[in-house]
Length: 246
Length: 88
Image (cartoon, rainbow over all chains, first blue to last red; front, top):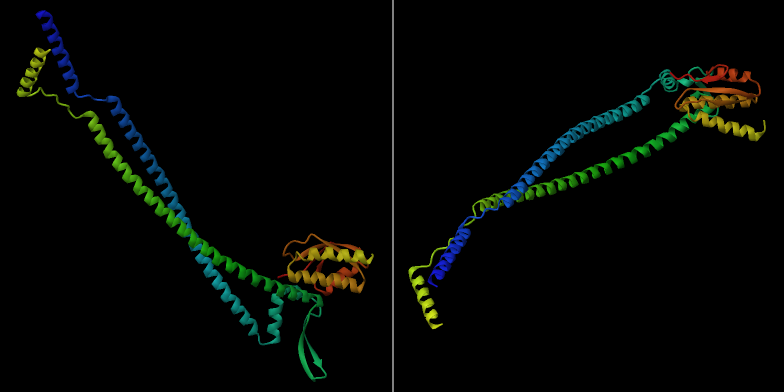
C-alpha cells in the first residue's frame, strides 16, 4: 500500500515538473514571425514601387512644365507680333492718307491692284463739271471692278467681327486656364495630404511591426514559483485536517 | 441659248470666280459681262483655284473673238483656254 502511494506520489511529482517546465519555457511562434516579416517586406516593396511611380510622374510633370513654359513664350512672341502688325496697319493707313500727288496715288493704287495696270483707259482722268465750273480728277476703272471694293469692305467688316469673337474666346481661355490651375493646385494639395497620411501610417506600422516581432521572439516569461513555507505548512495542515476528518 | 441657260451658266461661272483672288475675280467678271454686252458671247469657266489669278474657259456661244478683244482691252492674258490677270 505504501509502495503504491510512493509510486503515485512520484508520478504526480514528475508530471508536475514537466508541466512547470512547459509553462515556464518561452514559446516562440516562428510561423507568425515569418508571416509578419513577409508582410513588412511586401509593404516595403509596395512603398518602393509607389515611390518609383511617383518619381516617374514627377519627371513627366517636369517635361510638361517645360512644354508649358515654351508654349507660354510662343504666346508672348505672338502677342509681340500682333502688336507689331497692328502698328504696321496703322502706319500703312496713315501712309495712304499722306499721298500728295495724283502720280503718287496712281502708283500706290496700281501696287494695290496690279490687275488694273494693263487695262486700256485705266487711270486718272479730268472731268469737268459744267454746272459748278470746276474740273476734278476721277479714276477710270472697269465698272465691274467695283465688286472688289464691295467684297473687301464686307470681308473687313466680318474680319472685325471674327477678331472680336477671337478676343472674347482668348479671355475665356484665360479664365479656363486659371480655373484649371486652381484644380491642379487642389489636386496637388490632396496628393500631399495623402502622402503625409501614408508616410505617417507606414512609419507607425513599421515600428509596430518591429515591436511585434520582438515580442514574438522574446515573449514575456511566466514564472511559477513554489509556494512560501508558511503557505505550504498551512496547506499541509489543512490537508491533514481534511484527511483525518474524512 | 435660252435665258434660263444663260442664268445657269452665269451662276456656275460665279462659283468659279468666287474662288479667285477678289480683285482678279472682278476682272474676270468684267470680261464675261463685257463679252455678253458686246456680243452676246458666252464662255464657261473651270479650274479656278483658291485665291488664284487664273481660270480655264471654254467658248459656248457667240463671237469667240470677243474673248480676246475684250480681254485685251481689260489687260488680261488670254490663251485658247485660259484667262489670267496681272497680279504682281
